[in-house]
Length: 206
Ligand SMILES: O=C(O)c1ccccc1N[C@@H]1O[C@H](COP(=O)(O)O)[C@@H](O)[C@H]1O
Image 1: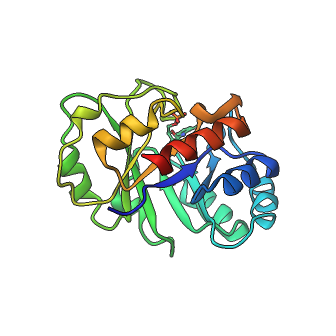
Image 2: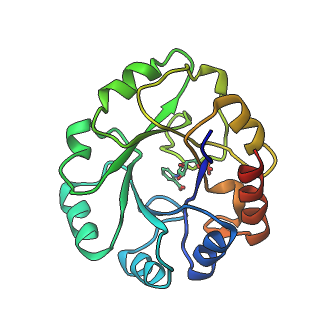
C-alpha cells in the first residue's frame, strides 16, 4: 500500500509553510475566499511560494469564485492544483490549465459515488463535513462510515482531522490523502508547528 499524502491548508505565513514542508507535508493550501479567517491575498501567497523548496505542491482553494477573480489569481500566483470548495460544476472547474480537486461536503443520504462520477475530470475528490451555511474549514469531522468503498476517484479525507484522530481516520477510510487546517492551528490562520509535526508523524505511522 502506498503512503498516504498530506496537505496542510490555510497557510498564511512563510514560517508555517516551511514548518509544514520540514515536517514532511506533500502539499500546502492557500484559501482565496475573503470570508475565511485564513484568507490570503495573491501577494501573500506569491511571497510564501517563493520561499518554498522544490517538489511541494501548491494548492489554491476557491469557493464560488468568479471566472474573473480566478483568472486574476492564476495569472499572479504559481499554483499547481486547484481546490474547488463551493457549488462549482465540473464545467466550472475545468479549463484552467491546472489539475483540480472538488470538495464534497458530506451528510447522511448523499450519493458520494455519483458525485465522484459527476466530476470525472477531477484528479481527486475531497470529502469534508457538511455544516449548514459554512463552506468548509469548520474543524468538525463527519461520520466516516458514510464513505462507500470502491469510489472512482482518489479520496482526500478532510474535516476535523487532528493529530489525535488522523491515524484512526486513515485506518478506517484508507484515503489517498488527508487534508487539515483547524486541527493544526494555534489560532485561526496561525499554525502550531508542534501540531503539524504530530499530525504528519501520525499520518506516516498510520
Ligand atoms: O479553511 C477555511 O477557512 C475554509 C474556508 C472555506 C472552505 C474551505 C476551507 N477549508 C477547508 O476545509 C477543510 C476542512 O478544514 P478543517 O481541517 O476541518 O479545519 C479542509 O479541506 C480545508 O482546506
